[in-house]
Length: 446
Image 1 (tube, helix red, strand yellow):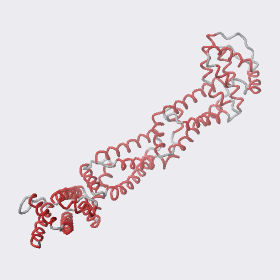
Image 2: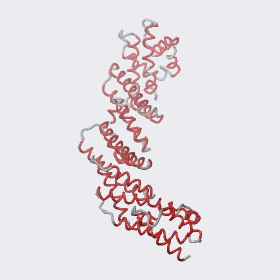
Image 3: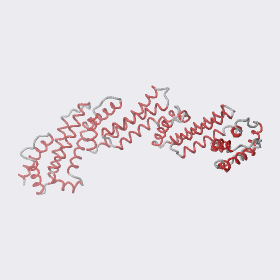
Image 4: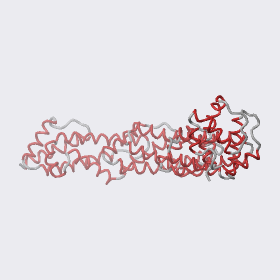
């Protein structure tokens, strides 16, 4: 038994050395070595054989790594990663030759022989530290250079990432440092961009952010990063470039985006704030933009021919932004409603009612002079809550009742009804009156 054990020990050491150095097996084939292993296991020496095998593998791993350059430059990194990956392949070969150890290993370690050998390799790397640190620093250097627009060896980077995943070191060694450097990179890049583009508008910055995130996504896919890593990289970019600068960004032309109905840029912004769980910030900015615009309309002129169409345009723009960019988010809808209420009531609600009455009278009479301002103003201030009540406004939606509703509205104001409006006039004006319904209720809400 001792002779057999000593003979197999010499054969095992030589075999492991040959496999690690990619030389032919000494004294026979893999099948012959397998038979030796089987014989030794049958003698009850499986555990002894496993411990000796682990020692032999560790010796060879350290020797192979010691012969590599630890300089994390491109050539040094490429060679070091190639050697480490080759050693992973060796572990597969060793586990196949010593497959008869699997049953003994599985009983004690709840793992296959290959998993035990791989864990041993991982432990050797963690203990020696320097080769592992060189690979991490080299991989991060390649990523940083790619972010700077340089041409890098993506295959080496992909191999390094593959090595970390094989050895279960990806989320322990590489990912934390990658995410830390990513946050720093995004913070610095956005600061530099904003300094260099002082007069730029928000859409330009959003386009810059999208280019950065797209480049990160492309590199991650090419080099085999885990999907979870890519999601965290995107989140880091959004946090550093959007969330941390939200106050500045939303004063960087956001109001113009809303009033000019630039739904594409606003949709991108909405997506970022939703990903960051920060929609309340964007919602407040939306409401503030509408409120300021509404107040500005009322303060700019007292001419109903100017004010009424301006309010119509504002409401139309706000609703299109809500639908196309903010996906009909009900909370943004509430912000729209509250903002219009606030702006239309920022000055006397009677002012809006008076302007509306003059405009309606002008529309109904086809521009034939309308009513005297004093009459309309007095009656509006006395009975604004009665004019166009919700049932009557709803009645405007029914063709048969439109004429009666218009007449009642004018009569309730005490305005002189000259000629009875004909059906063609009613038909032409009903749609325009209906378009006022939403904001009439806001203007007269007291």
